[in-house]
Length: 139
Image 1: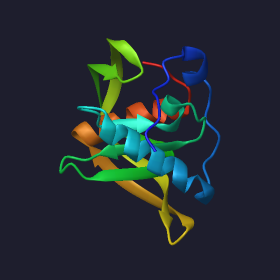
Image 2: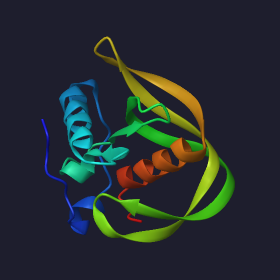
Image 3: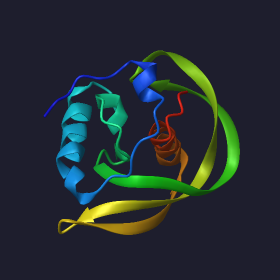
Image 4: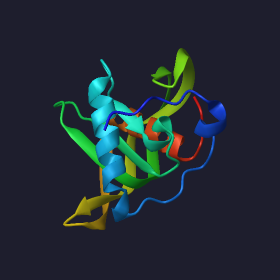
């Protein structure tokens, strides 16, 4: 179901609770909402008002992915850049890493399975932005 985007910093700055397999409907709401927004490439659950650690994003091939409880384990190659966010009007300067290692859960057959994966470039930047959302960090 398509949800309205939250722009309230009081909600967005809250640390998200860990997600469970029961949050599959929330993940679908995120995918539906992201698909309804022109040029949207990533979205976190707190951006639709739910303080859970669930994020979605589109990769370079325009395929969508869901991550539950993402955590950055390692970052290499720090760089400064300017980012936009669906929840804010202005661009903000941030420091990101060109390559990251992330631990996250994936829903498989109704249960969360832990995964680890390396990401680079644009995907790494989006995932760092989403992890910041999960921690209540605003750009």
